[in-house]
Amino acid sequence: MEDRNIVKQGAIAGAAFILLMIATFFVPIISLVTVFLLPIPLIVFGSRFGLKPVAILFLIISLISILILSIYSLPIVFVMGLGGLAIGAAIYSKKDAYETWAQGTFSFAIGMAVVYAITQFMFDVNWVHELNTLIEESLESTVAFAEQVGTPISQEEYEALQQSLSELTYLIPTGMVLIGLALAFISQWLSYKFINRADGERLKFPPFKDFKLPTSIIWIFLLGIILTWIYTDPAETMYLAAANLYALPGLLLVIQGLSFVFFFTHYKSWSKAIPIFTVILFVLFPFLLIYPLRILGIIDLGFRLRERLNGSK
Image (cartoon, rainbow, N blue to C red):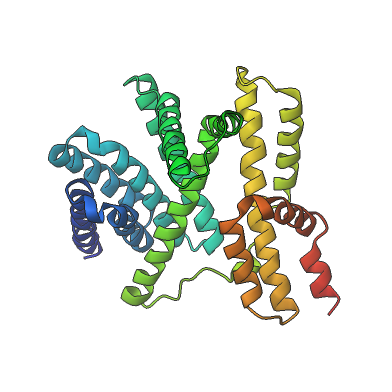
């Protein structure tokens, strides 16, 4: 009876995934929405039956997608399916929300890295060149717009902006992790809503004020800083590693700093508008707050500020 239920639920989840894939491929208007919904059928199925059944379903879905939508659908199926599989299995194993998020982020990022490597070395797709082309086109559009509004960009400003944006090509690994972070959060949050309603569960993310990274992230960030001092030539392989070891932990520490703002506001019983305004200000003017928030995140983790404040009550 249980096996029949697994087959039935698997057929429903598989059909939902395939329909979302078809919508993603053939209905461009809604593809930006459906692409975030793709992992949900696998997450829900995995949360009910565990890793082995959802892994089998993942393989079946991959084969069906190739037959219906061609092999070009495989990268999306692989990335979204791998992330959905990981999150679903984590929920089934009763892992907490942040552990589940981390597992999903890692799986999405690994999926993108595998697709990147295969397309780069087997299909000769040069992603760095494609990104540089996109940057050049964006710069040209920016220059044209600036001239139209009467604030032309000088040659020196153009070159400085071009140099800054070209550094993005060295941060592709960091970009993959950040995209994985966003994909995992959105699909996990939506899945929680569905599972709670369909299965009567009470899954949710803890308040953001309770978000906390492992202290080891500080040492990884410091290692990244040291390596950026040592390897300054972009032609060196270690420069790529140094840039990403500096950028990714640095951004995670910014999130830790934002979390502490939420915690301290709650601790002091201040208005909830303060942390919300801080987030909005950070989104609008990231370079204004990125360093103060990063320092705040380091102090919070390194000096155990929350434990000290809670202990002083």
